[in-house]
Structure formats: structure tokens, C-alpha cells
Amino acid sequence: MSKVLIIGAGGVGRVVAQKCASVPEVFSEIMLASRTKSKCDVIAQEVGQGRIVTAEIDADNVPELVALIQQFKPEMVINVALPYQDLTIMDACLKTGIHYLDTANYEPKDEAKFEYSWQWAYQDKFKEKGLTAILGCGFDPGVTSVFTARAAKHFFDEIHELDIVDCNGGDHGKAFATNFNPEINIREITQKGKYWENGAWIETEPFEIKKELSYPNIGVRDSYLLYHEELESLVKNFPSIKRARFWMTFGQEYLTHLRVIENIGMSRIDPVMYKGIEIIPLEFLKEVLPNPGDLGENYVGETSIGCRIKGLKNGEAKSYYIWNNCSHKAAYDETGAQGVSYTTGVPAMIGAMMLLTGEWKKPGVFNVEEFNPDPFLEKLGEYGLPWSEKENSDLEL
Ligand code: NDP
Image (tube, rainbow, N blue to C red; front, top):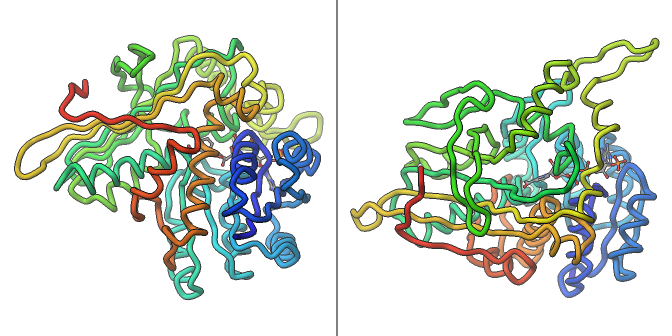
């Protein structure tokens, strides 16, 4: 029986709040706090089952966070605000002596740079206080990292090749929209690609490498090599990996919109003057694009995200594929949120459950693959994300 503070009332926050509210035996009291309290109130009213209290918080402000935590006295924070808030929330957890979990690594606002260094630097501080910080507990990073840990624990002596494959085979009917926060999403996918090979990072131009990959229940989709944050921790935690890559599907229509957005300067994150006020073009663009949290209503199709792995077991070469498919419509019918919010929110709730029940509790800062994957994966299907696996099939990679 534990109190939890959820920070962030977007699409992911909605799913986390609903899922926590549905497990009173673990999450005995729940507070949902965010920059705009009215959004928390709507979520609490629609999916909170009368179990969620709400508050306004500026999570960039450590003293404000400390005051809220001291008032509510939770055992942990589930941070599903934006990656910009990771460090201030970690600081507040340290000051108040509570545990921490997030779904995306810290990024400075003025530079689209994805690395764990800032958060890994908190290792000693969390350790000294006997507190746990769980990093990257959404789907990717998150479930993909736990899938890899399962492969390493039960199927391989050495993992040599890891390909994370992320397909959104859904259609929301809009000309262009992103599936989670547009600012964070566009920063991520317009970066150079990068993958790990033989002990070094190889950089590519954005969208330079493409393969046609087939996804269960969806079919063949153009899949592009991107850099994604979990690669950094996975190659560190599984040092036998010789090559690690991340693939994401994009349709031609999406890529055309993205190219135009970039060419006309709307993806810029440096300030420009407009009628005497400084604006950041990408922040402005976010305001005119569809809200990802509102895409669910007419969203059809499925996501399919998984890991395709090659390596050795008992000296023999083998392959392994583990994945989850999630229907946007089923996610919407259950939570009012589309599949990408759902596939992020469910693992965040389960990660928090792992921490609070002691399965994933140890002092320090950890990526999810550093914990026992078995109890997490037992719960994943039960709470809405069943997974499948097969051995020695053609991985296409
Ligand atoms: P949204 O933009 O929909 O929601 C973010 C929420 O955080 C909003 O309610 C926003 O408030 C709030 N917020 C922003 N800044 C502050 C602040 N300074 N103080 C308090 N609250 C703040 O994003 P999503 O729900 O789509 O995504 C949430 C997180 O999940 C992101 O970090 C994203 O990167 C991560 N994610 C992870 C994935 C994974 O698989 N690991 C996949 C998808 C997302 P307001 O409503 O006022 O704007």
C-alpha cells in the first residue's frame, strides 16, 4: 500500500493515472499534478474512479516540487511530464527522500541531445540515500529493454546483434500529427541516425538507411534506422553486443511533411523574434499541430514493437524475436488515449508497481534492463500489453 505522485497530464499521464487507479492494493493513494491543473481534473474525473487528487505544479521548479512532495508524502514519483523536467524532479526526490521513475532521458531544452550522462551522474546520490531511480520505463525505452533482458536471461549466452523494430501501423486520419509530444518527437527524429557496431557508434544522415521489414498482423513497412536512447544503455549493460540498431516505420506522406517542416525552418529550436517577442519555431508548431492526446477517437490499426536478436546459446547460433502488438482502438476504448500513450503508460505503471512491491528496488540509478525481467513481463500481459516470441525465424536483418 503506497502513495504515488504522477507528474504530467498528457496522453501518457492519463494512461498511468487510470492504470494506477485500477490497482488500489499497490497504489493506495494517487496524486496527479501537472502544469495545467484543469487537465489533471479532467483525467481524475474521467478515469480516476474517485481515487485521484490533483494539483498544479511547475516541475521546472525544485522548491515547488519539494513543497508538494512534503505536503502529499508519496513514496515515489512517476515522471511523465517532458524530458526537460527529469533532473529537477530527481533533485526534488533526493531532497525529500523518495523514489523516482521516468520514461524518457533528460534533454536540455536548447539542444536536442539524447544521452544518459546527466542522469547516470546521479548514481552516487541515489545510492547514498538508499533510493531507487528507474530510467526509461515506457515501451521504447522500457519494454524493449526488458525484452532484451529476457533474451539474455533465458535464450542466449551471448547476444551479438540486437535490432529494435518499432512500427506504427495505425492511421489517425490526419494529414500530419505526431503520436506523442510533437516537440520531443520532431527533435528526436530529425537528428542524425546512429548505431553501434564493433565497439563504436556509426553516424548516418537522417533517414539514410531504409529496409522493408514485415510486422506481425500489419505487413511490410518502410523502416528507417534512427538513433534511440535505449541503445546507449543496452550496449553498456550487454557488452557482448556487436551491433545494435533501432528501426522505426514512417510513411512517405509523413516524411514529406517532415521535410517541408525542416526546410521552412519550423523545426528550429533557437529563438526568433516575431512582432517583438522571442518565439521558438518548434514550440509554436506544437501549438498548431493536433494534440497527440486527442488522436485516439478515429485511430485504427496497431503498433508492433519488438526486438530481433541473434547470438549464441551453448555454442550454437540462434535467433529470437519478441514483440507486442497494440490496437489503437482497443487502447482508446479502454482509456480514451491512443496506442502510443497506452504502450508507454502501462509499462510506467508496472515499473512503479515493481518498485513499490520490492521486485525492482535497489539503491542507485538504473535502466530497466538491470532488473529481473520476469516479474515485469508476467504483469505486462495482465495489464493490457500481451507479448509473443519465437525462436529461429527469419529476422530479415
Ligand atoms: P504530453 O505533451 O501530452 O504531456 C506532457 C505533460 O507534461 C503535459 O500535461 C504538460 O503540461 C506537462 N508538463 C510539461 N512541462 C511541465 C512542467 N514544467 N511542469 C509540470 N508539468 C509539465 O506528452 P506525452 O504524454 O505524449 O508524453 C509524456 C512523456 O512520455 C514524455 O517525456 C515523452 O517523451 C515520454 N514518452 C516515452 C515513450 C517511451 O516509449 N519511452 C513513448 C512516448 C512518450 P501542459 O498540459 O500544461 O502542457
